[in-house]
Image 1 (spheres, helix red, strand yellow):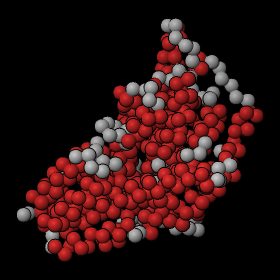
Image 2 (cartoon, rainbow, N blue to C red):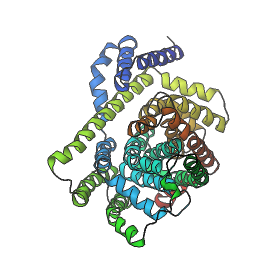
Image 3 (cartoon, helix red, strand yellow):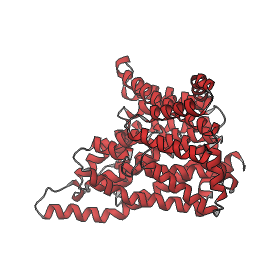
Image 4 (cartoon, rainbow, N blue to C red):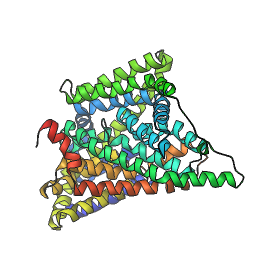
Length: 449
């Protein structure tokens, strides 16, 4: 059987098994094992456990459960609500200040937690009710939190970027630094849209009131004294210190990414103990339980995805697919457009973790041959995968929002995310036109490649 026929069969079987409802990790493992049994030497089955273990036994991947613990400690404490309240108090006089506050809170929380669902849940549980109380439309309130949550896989430390660094064999430090510029760009775009949308939201709130509805807080002149604003800072500063401390340790050369993850997790536990008096075993147990469950799920997906990729490589499926793409002789930018289009389609069905590990062996060789910087491409691909988190049919953040705000119809949540999808598409175009947005900072701090 030719590699092309094998590849088509591999893809069709994978889709059928995934559509059966089987968890992604088991689906990938079943497909890979089946093809090993039928198309590879019988002795290869004896190496399954060894292959999976060797792929997971990576110092870089060790940072994943530690970053998850750090995110769980912050995400399941009142930190998100405190962070949001402080930023709202300082920005309440700015047009669209409440929307901007949510964007900034999502960005800062994402940088500390490294998880999109955790960011959506922590900031949304405080931000959405407050926006609804002040008369913001349900769609906008849900959309801005769903979009802000996606920053969790772009701003460092990002679990998605850790996996891309492993798959692409690129420097994790450079990749983390490259995510800062585009992350700030998205924050500016989202905040700018909140300002642009403010007038419309005010008119909607006023229309509801004049038609006999409830007068929302949006129509009141809410005021915070300087003393009240300053009073809110002490509960935010420790977490900013945590964020700065982790970044200094990583980029100052004081610790490796894995050591930094451990330092961050330890500091997060210390801070919630000091600030929120959360230190008893029964109070810390939910953090540890959540970390074990999420880490186990992720590492199982990683192990099975890498076994899946190993089978593709052994059967020359990935090499043949990459050569087929090269033989199309597409122009540089058309090649990029086709690959990103494929990532968008995969985003309908798969999480970023699986997309990276399944596609890397196929798409990276042609991109490298075309002269693309794989660090830059990693950032572009991450933004595109962010879009997958907020578009149907299985945008993870959509369901997180629906869970924390069940009174908002799923249709309204989806409509609310559409403007932010457009802004993310704009960010991709800007990154293509001005790649320095992603590459200047790592080149400046770590030297040009």
